[in-house]
Structures are given as C-alpha cells and as structure tokens.
Image (cartoon, rainbow, N blue to C red):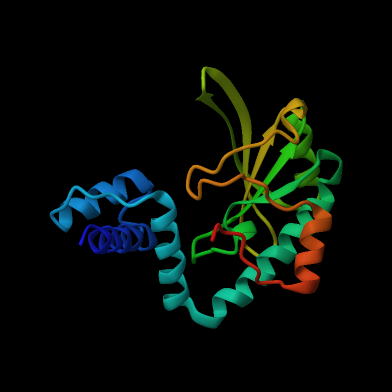
Length: 202
C-alpha cells in the first residue's frame, strides 16, 4: 500500500513538473502528496524516472531525434570551449530531455569573462550572466552562469567554475549518483555508438 501510494505521488509530482505547474522537486512532491491525501514522499530519483516516462509518452519519436540534435550541438560548443575542459551535464547528458530542456555544459576557468568573449565571437547569443553561490557542507562554492542561445535556437546554460574544481566529485541532488557528465571524447563515442543512450541509475 505504501509503495503504491509513493508511486502515485511520484507520478503526480512528475506531472506537475512536466507541465510547469511546479519548478522544484521538493514543492512538487509536497503538493502531490497533499493532493492525494498522504504524507508518503517518493525520492527525487523516483520522481525523475516518472518524469522521463511522461516526456516519452508525450513527445514520442521526436524526443529521441531532438536529443541527438542537442548532443551534436553540445559537441560543437564544447569544441569551441576545449581549453576550458568542458563537460556535458544536465538532461542532454542524462538523455532525459523534455520540451523545454536546454544544453548544460560545465567549464573550468578562473576568468569566466573570457568564455563570454569566445561565445560572442562564435555568434552564440549571450542573453544573461550571473554569479551563483551555494553552501555545501560549510564551504561556499561560486559559479558563473552564462545563459545563451545558438543558431538552432536551443537554450544554453554554461556553468563556469574555478580550475581547482575540475575533476572533483559532485553528487547529483536528483538522481543521487555521481555527476559525471561527458567529455568531448566521451560524447563523440556516444554519438557514434549509441546516440540516444541514457545515463541514469538503475
């Protein structure tokens, strides 16, 4: 009974997230539980798996084609930023994109303004930039976020972190595993061998 309720809450929370009624997993789970009259909350991973299923049901074959195109575009951008050790992260890495997904790339540089110049020089429209600071286990981590759009109109978010953070292990708040992502060589291999491969815990 508990398991069934948690599944229903996960599905409801995922539906709220997919259709934009909620933006954050925590709020979506709380609202879903209230709607279904229970206090049982699923894990973020359980909600994420339901969200992926809902995206597949609603978007069908077009979703896989879009994923391949977004991965190809990500590769082009990563090659432009090669000296900054780019890593493809987010839903394009995971293979769990939905209609509004953008391309997320992590880069490492102590001078993020240089990345902005490189992007503008390559005709990538930079829409906004912002510093973000988060506290992780007593340590404040700063990152520089660059929001843009390429010629194919896919949204783009590039997260620039300091060089000393390159290679450090990061845990994913949603899936609970290590946030590995894909390097240029790894992404090329995926596109050659299994372009719609998913990277989610089983």
